[in-house]
Length: 634
Figure (cartoon, rainbow, N blue to C red):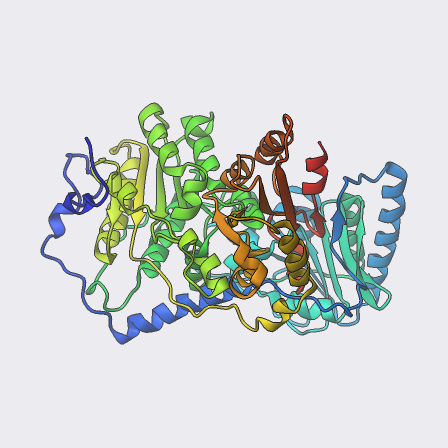
């Protein structure tokens, strides 16, 4: 088939094919999308609020020159540092002594919060086992509870009670790995940690590193034996007396069975059905939440069956997660899903999709899997091409669905710079339209079609579990799902007057002197620098000497900087954790042979503006590696 750009309108929209080979959209020709009512607009304002809070988390802050760098600070690593056994023993002893003293002397009580990855340690289960849920934990001297991220790996259709410890003055001990992006997605109560941090009563124990109060301020100690510290924490808390379960009386057995055992099976839920006029009372996010709730109920009915959802990085997917979390329903992900959200590696779940379909025993095991990703992130890891490859070449036993939100833009970057950058538009309508004729691909142009697809998938799930429907991979392209929010560029004066901007003007101005053409400035729209770059290009005279070229991927941006340039020079903007592969290829191109190629690489770090910046996406807890300058030396 040959198709020219612009002909996409002649294609008939199609849904998934049922077992009889009939398009599931055929039976809904007389149904219409109704105008939105006030209740729907109210729900839309809720998801807009989630999106606003999400983008607020990415605003690049300016740290004043006179701010004293005291207390807990991320460790900036330009070279690897590995503690030897004697250093680890010394630091571990100091941390254990300090934390044990804090626990023993905390008159307001102690609250130990266990993250999902802490559950891999037997110490976590032992601590939970000795807790009592015979009465409320309110006012108890010692409380232990599961963190919110752990809850989102358990099948739940309503949120468990959370300990009432906000602003209680308690010593808060968090064991496991927090994540800035993850905490935003699951609507974590960051306030309790911010308050504890400001009041010098927060301990955060991660693998090999610990933040804790030392003297009058919080400090980070690197190179500790985290298992030994965790064991000492558990021992010191037991020494205080009874430990209370933090999720309410008579709730421990049910949650512990879901976290560590095999709970008894509940009744299989009925497939998802939708009532009422489309557009009258619910928005599309609510429809997706209802489908996620159904999957939780399937897991509770089939405890031994793998039923897992994975969510990628991006605005619409994060808003969906916020809607799920606010509803009280579990996202029903797993440890890999949480790790990918902590790291916020764009397109990461596509690699997980490949593993599930192509690697044994996942590919040979019955299961129900769902993947949610935006069109920008999907293309970064070849998501559609991989899905079609897996459909054609593999016969996995699972029922798997890849949901792609197709809103044609990189929403977060445009919102950060208060402008619709052409570089950030995704011209992919024709690309997705070409997929419509595939029987295992559905394109949902409106809410009516999305409801039809979700209802069909839930019915198919029921039949699949009975052995009456074939396994396989399907793809659902969701259009018309979006959010509206004001730009968050904010006060630009601190950025315009910052040392970073002065440095950019001086260095980039000098680099472009005498050039007849605009010098290419390659990047991939990283949030670490996008606001500075935008203002440099728009407000500064030196910026007029440059053209910003946004690669479709980090790899593409790195590749382009290695090619021949009109002026023999170009600039590459990267962040501090940029990978070696593509950059190395381009550096070899620049440095090979004889001549005068010039490449200026500018490396950007995040800002430390709040507690959760210690646990920034793409970086280890409490550590900011700076790989670029070291990699370039190779």
